[in-house]
Amino acid sequence: AFDKTGRRIFVSLKDRLPEKYRQFADIWNCYATSDGIYFILYHQIFFWDRRQLHVIEVPDVELYKGVTLGERLILSTYDHGLYEVVDGKLKYLSGSTIPSTKKSVAYIRLVFDSGTLLVYVRGEGLYLYDLNASAKSAALEPFDNEMNHFLNRSKVSSAVVVNSRRFAFGT
Image (cartoon, rainbow, N blue to C red; front, side):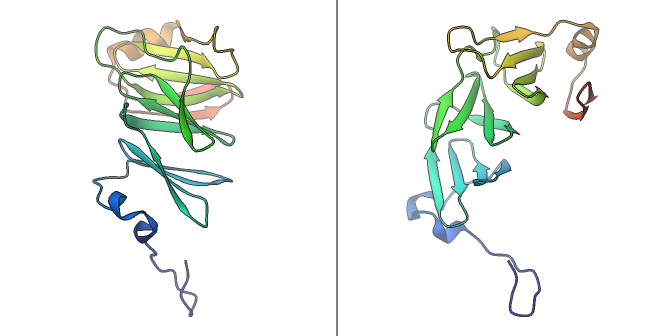
């Protein structure tokens, strides 16, 4: 926001939250869509629609990070797969639970193409997830290639889409 002289000023949204939500530790990530701004905490999502701050409760899972795909917000969780925010609620994406015997999280999610996510799981490798698949056929599919074997031996900490055919991974 700007003050009367045109200087930028900080404006907290915290007072727009219901009293019971005003005490929280950290906001881990923020994501913008044309609908508004999503603020991600472990067990809540605060959504600012540019008029009002809404609270989406997330009692059964622990949120990690996300990715926007157009107007869609996809979030990963610890041990519970991928979720999407739909109509102010968190919806599980069928077949997105990581097939692992150890605690796992989709550390990195990148847009592979217009309807597919490239998901990196530390110690497990790369997977593709088709966001347009039906609930019955949706699944994390191993993305088996030479790079996958290298990434499994490395500790990937970041990644970015370079262009439609290239990705860069930070190890």
